[in-house]
Length: 209
Image (cartoon, rainbow, N blue to C red; front, side, top):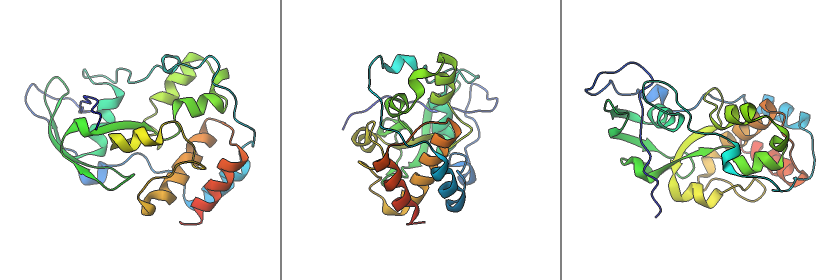
């Protein structure tokens, strides 16, 4: 299994010693709209064939930017999505527990996790982000105010890659409603397009809610 060397952060002030752990109530991104609202938002999305990958690089989406206290976006997400996460003054996890929502696996080592962009960067590029400014792409890649960023099992994230819900859905069936709601919310917020197969798949997934 590939490991990525992810570290974990505190989003509040901390000393050189350990900070207070996250609570279970904090262990999730901001929730997307409910299924009824998601259905309305899905209907409002522009249906369009995916564009090409011409010109795409991950560097065009500056990500894991500084969030203060020597911590970057990736570290903030791991702190937020874990339980009883302890970090040191260098923003490195020393303990914690993470449950990957995609497959239900429970991890106690940060290296077993990736931070997934719900709507992958390459998928966003093919759906309209190719026309954005760098500042807009930076916002998208580091969005802590929506359900765009999730701490998940690394090899599950790698299996997802840049696939949309017509091609890939989380192995854990009970999460597929949340997955669809989150995907739709991100596309709606950023006015990205969907292709016809993607839209149909999202509609089916909302039917599991």
